[in-house]
Image 1: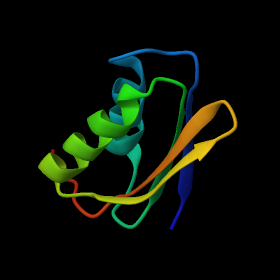
Image 2: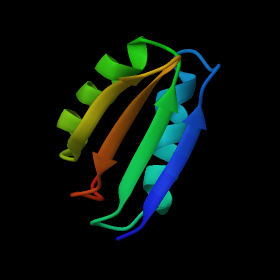
Image 3: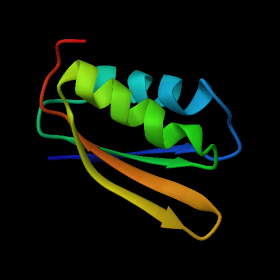
Length: 78
């Protein structure tokens, strides 16, 4: 398992989800992607994308000044 870090702090919709998907396309099943974002919409965008693509949101945590969202790659279908 590899953990990929996507730092999308300072980027606004659709930036964080676009960067997440770019990394997802290179990731392998079982990998984790840690998205760092300052855009509050990233929480709902990532949750919707994960449900649609059949991947797992492992963690959503409000850090000081940004949001950390961890996704586990379960499916490479979309």
